[in-house]
Structure formats: structure tokens, C-alpha cells
Length: 117
Length: 116
Image 1: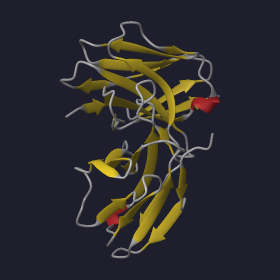
Image 2: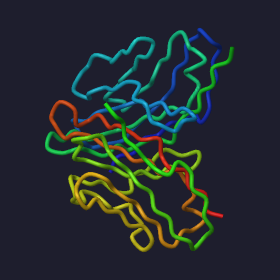
Image 3: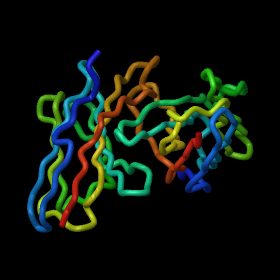
Image 4: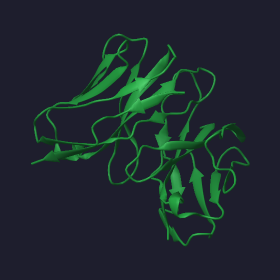
């Protein structure tokens, strides 16, 4: 079974600054995906960024980037130029790779991020 | 395209009552999930359907929870009887199991259940 751990229950950052959210995971799988999801008060999970485990290059999506350390089983999210709209819960999640069917996500406990004006 | 639809958005019941939640996935998505998210925690998978068959229900408390997806489209999740610890947000998600996209889940806005 996979486990995902987010050690920072809450974080805050000043608008326009950079913040890094931490995530570690445990798995015996060699092929998998890692994700960061954002959950605003509307409750809908919004995909922020994803990383395929077989890719060494860190994923980047505009102001969002990850630091993926496969050997250390670490997957941190960096948000640059933080905006007020980034205020939300952030969840790290793991998914096994399976080409034949949809797969389940295993989520961490979440980090509440507050961006201060 | 239309997203994953869930209803109701909120539900308040007393313990020992019954409740049902409804989910309509994105058209064409064969895989459907129900997640339970207790306040302050990450979502936990309750059940996964592939069309109208169950793929994984290992974490579904089967003495009180049931779910069905009779025609492989809509799904309902039922709790009978409800307990205080069932208070949570129930999220539905769907995906299309193709090689290119099967890792991307689309989530609904969830149903927030309060059991008093």
C-alpha cells in the first residue's frame, strides 16, 4: 500500500513571494504518477501539476514547479509570485501506473496555504 | 464539456437516519470514484467502479454504506444508518481509462454531510 505524508499542516506567504510545500511518499512501485491538487472553499479538487515517475525532468506549470527526488521519495511544490487566489488547501497525491483501467489516488493530509496581502 | 455533477450540495441529518448522494460523471467516463473527506484530512477512497462493476471497495464500511452504478453512468452512494463520524464531504470523480488520459481525475464539488 502507498502512503503520502504532508508534514506542514499550515503555511503562509506574502503576496508575490515564493513558498514551498513538502510531500513525501512511500511505495514499492517503480512506475507511478505524483500530483498536487488545490482545493479552494468551493471544495472542487483542481489539478495543479503532475509528474511521471519515469521522467527525471521536474514538471513546471507557469508559476508552479516541483522538485521530484525519486530516490528520496520526495515531491515538493514551489509556488512563485504567490497570488491571493492561491489561498487554498493543497494535497499531494500518488497514483500507480496502469494502462488498462482508471486508477485510484492516494492523498496526503493536506497543507493549508494562506497568501497574505 | 460539462463537469462531474453531484447533488445535493449540503445535507443535514440526525444519526441513525438514511441519506443518499448522487453523482453524474463526465460523459463517456467509464471509471467513477467515491471519496470521503473528513474535515482537516485528505480524501479517502470508498469505492471505484469500472462501468457498472466494482473495482475496489476495500475501504467501504459495508455494514452501513452501499453504492451502485446500475447502467454504468450515474452512481448513488447511500448511508444507512448514519453515524456521527460519517460527517464529511463526499466527493465523486471520474476518468476515461485510455492510455493518454487515465491518470487525470475530474472531481465534482462534493456533498457536505452533517450528522447531528
